Image (cartoon, rainbow, N blue to C red; front, top):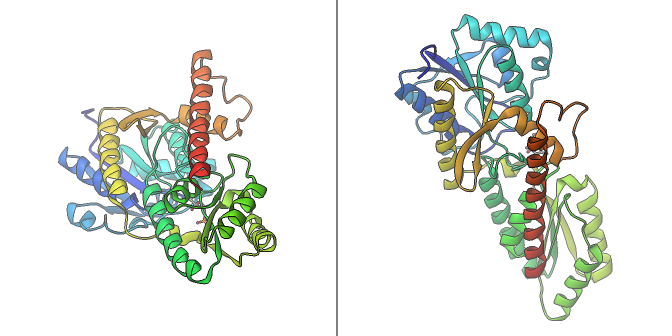
Length: 354
Ligand code: F6P
């Protein structure tokens, strides 16, 4: 263990995700078991700026894994992106002898972590967002719970829509990513799934509903990602009703998908990631994000992860690739292709089973 680590901080930031509390517990217990004190930073980077800290002890993190949300609360902090905000955050760390930070959240959280590292406070990130939209990792905390919630809600809608011979068009969160709609849609046997990553064939979906209705089917489920835009799901609902004659209802699940009891997958992965984050920090490493790749927990450079993510999302900024070798850039391109190919494969399965 690098000698200088006597106390670390842990924070949750950005949209909350089921499993954040389990990660918090893991970080706390892993650090305490190595003789390192832990403080929780309230309200994400906002609390780091204002110095809102709470000592974390085993009893403070006992029994928190069963709930979603985050006991440290969360925030999307704009002040942290300013020099003044950053200076105050660094000062909080200095005054309170915080030697390093574990930051739990999504890409905005990692941008904050990498800035903080640059200002002399070592940081390690843990990916937590229901969207599963961080390209460097196969899994982000909260995704499984969110999908299970969508599955339960869709099952409930299926019950009533079967009775009334209706079609439910369900819009789910995911920001610009369609993972929640795609995987939950396959699980509930959706007749059609629309996601931002791939073109949606509305005519084929309508023809499928008509054919199934003609063959005697009564209830239908269609899953739609919010990333397709505010009106997409509502428009599709009207179109299905008009062109198939099947009475249709639109349901936006919105934030309900962020709550609920975290699944085993989320709690277990949070435990592994929290432990790995503390290991990395106390080994003297920083500016890393903990990732799950092919079932293994690994760590990757945050800046590499952020640029890879922007490449995948086609949001590269000028100069983003300059500090990476030609080989790195090639590998990033390959990883983007693999990520999209995996979605195409799943989408093909979804259509086959629709
Ligand atoms: O990133 C998580 C997420 O729940 C997205 O799926 C969604 O688009 C967004 O956050 C909603 O943000 P807010 O909670 O600020 O409305």
